[in-house]
Image 1 (cartoon, rainbow, N blue to C red):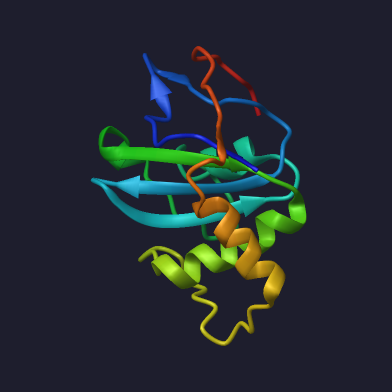
Image 2 (cartoon, one colour; image 1 turned 180 degrees about the vertical axis):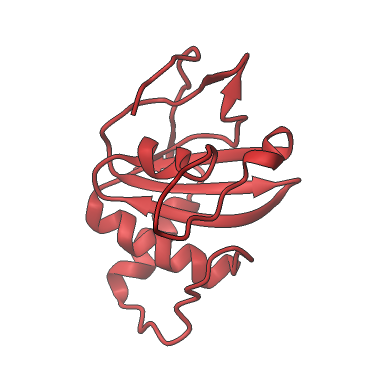
Length: 137
């Protein structure tokens, strides 16, 4: 498992994202408060930036386009199985206001607690961010 520090998702109008095509979890902070936790089993970049850009879709998507100056994000690279467990455990623990599913009735198992503990450990490797790049969807 690898995680980034919280960082601004755009620099000089360009996306800042460590690596594409990886599974993991993302956390979105608004003015220092974690307001959303999400995951992807295939492309974390696409999943996270969906909340930071304007979309025309038939599905309801929480977006923060009008709040970008106050947004910071964290990405956590992990396996798809870890991503599912970590997303649920972080939502249960943090109760972000914009996550509609709160998983109160989710019966956490040993693997779920182990994944959360691994995330919380300070020695989890921190991902270095690359220079801003324009990455088309």
